[in-house]
Image 1 (cartoon, rainbow, N blue to C red):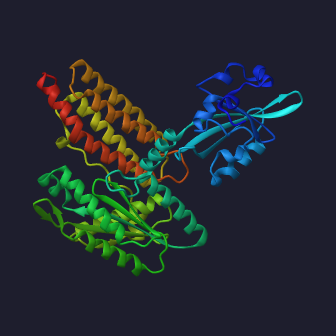
Image 2 (spheres, one colour; image 1 turned 180 degrees about the horizontal axis):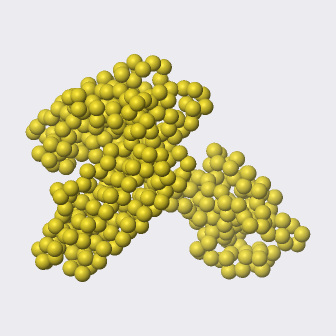
Image 3 (cartoon, rainbow, N blue to C red; image 1 turned 90 degrees about the horizontal axis):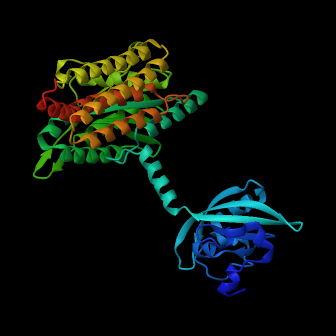
Length: 434
């Protein structure tokens, strides 16, 4: 039992059952009887880093102690269709891999044997973990992103509604950030955002959370609130944190922030109305002189909603076809604003936004191909990413904030027009397109 030859020998009873799989170097295959290994082919031994010592070993000892209960449960459920189980394995050289084990039954000579196929899924699991992190984290600041924040807000609102509790939502954006970004460049602007994001996070309790919604816009969720004064105290801390000087190489800049505060359920009883109330309060703070906070009011919250997108000639890029389509997209986004403000159904409008966005992208890509645009691949990649984002934002999921999706789309359209589309238009105009 200790030699390599024995570990990979084909017992006669298995020859007819497994056929060529037994000798395969591609499929790691083992068979157990009474949960002890009866047979393991060469690929299985290689996967587990064990040239000998596998035969007779209890199957659950193939994996680390913390995952043995998981594997034991899978073994108990093993049936003709097989049961998947992913568990970590310590190989003979000390390395650790994640193995996917598929379990099924083989009946032979009135004996029930357990067939085990295995494959290394370590890299796949790492990729999935990374994608999962990116899906819920703002890549620039490391804070929660819209998707994570929307999920947190939904859960807090449901809990507060059941328990009759209150919580606060604080909307913030930086005063004068665009001027700093334009003067010192995008890298400096990104550094500034990272520093301020870190400062904001340091102002909060463990039960609170801060997310970056995009650009220089942040939102804070105070999930457990006893007094209105507690929200004011946090707002003042955030204002002081934003005002701390930040070094940008040879220069030092000092920012400010304005804060809008809305309470649930005092100012709004739904997620979208609460966001709208905090938004309205934020704009009030800016009108009152910036660097300060303002409260929402129940009166303004009732008819409020996300701000409309102001679209005018300054957004034109100089290509008639593209400018018409941009204006149409802006109009559709404002239709969605109106639906939210009036409490109307928004799903039809949202589907039309996706459909028209696809049409617009196809038009741009046709022009890029027709005139051999040099940066077409990068531009198409931006299109693909946006469509993936808006299809996966979860609009059909109960409780997801349409306001957050709308804010994202508004920001995207402005950024895309002023960036990638202006570059495309310049190249097309140079070729005589108008």
